[in-house]
Length: 110
Length: 113
Image (cartoon, rainbow over all chains, first blue to last red; front, side, top):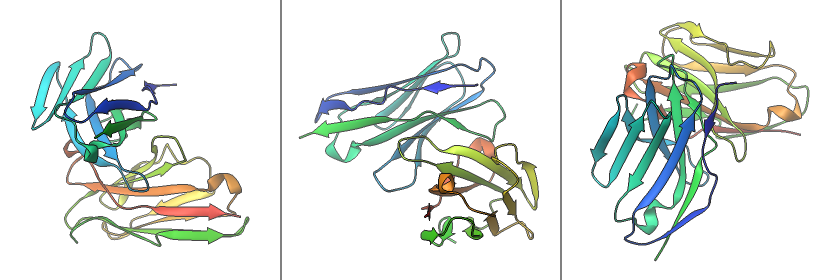
């Protein structure tokens, strides 16, 4: 069973702080990695994709990938209450079939 | 269209009945995917279409599930002899190519009673 593991949370951070969300995966040949945000009762929306080791920044979001450690993370700087949602890590080795974790619930408190 | 459209948004059906769930992808997106999401879980891959053909249907749980995309645009997920365990949100997504990441529709919440 190829697994994607995330701490279910909830992760609570104060407004303005950095939220750090982590994900580990078991399939060593995984080649593409995605972070999705899902608000309660809504469908997932793509935040970031990352394909090579290192950091990738997009606005307040930074994705970090370490293939040797089979670890991918998402940092959210200057967290806002509107960032409160479930964050889903997704991994693929096929390029199209995403294997999702169960998600981490993030709560940003004013 | 502007986004991925799924109909109906909610469907309640009796155990043993047949249901069809429809997905209209973003115009021009050749790749289309169906996923199923149960409460507290991440989405689970069901099937991937590239154009009209099912390139990978390995995620379909059993032969009660079938999906088509006859003209390479709209897709229909069909579930025969529904069971209570089929209750979930069925998500459709599309993309220009798999590497682009998906755009999900708003989903169909299926409840089998």
